[in-house]
Image (cartoon, rainbow, N blue to C red):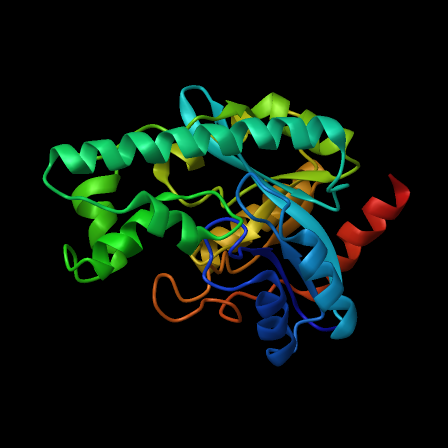
Length: 274
């Protein structure tokens, strides 16, 4: 059974590749099932779904929602959602607007530190997607302020740095409810990404999540096995993927993390029963 990648990003949020190009990469890698899970938007799903049909790849419409729990940021991945569900769209529209306000605050803080970035140029780069920190990091690199995109985060955009502005999030409970309301399944995204998130995972699993992302570039083989075992113990589904953002951080990560096809099939079966 062909492998799957159920965590991918496009230019609809902070990736470098258009949704159709994301699908083309997946086809070239021989993936059988993919999900586009852009941050707080479903804008790329229609294009990706059409491309997936052309390439005969099974496609799960998804989203990665920015949420908070116990004063910590937690991402919730929704798979198999109705991209046009009105309540979900209303929430995502609010989050996108808040992202826009955040970027304006970041640009103002950079200006205070003697760094001017053209907002109109940033918007042109972002296309139809919201401007994210990655767009700013790339602009800092293009302006010669930094040598690589990650340096922009380390020097300016991460917590405690001169242009850090917290991101607006919604409660995790609301994110899960929105995904369920839109007919999808809710997963804890990359639970091994940080120490704080690892500590929160047992508490988060007290909420009505449908599954957990076991596969992610930040997860060691031991961590993957741990999360698969945890899912089995709790009767949860298992998902995950490369979290590929195209070339924004260097070589694309798609293909480096492959979810066994049987796990993608179980998710599709669960969606069919819902």
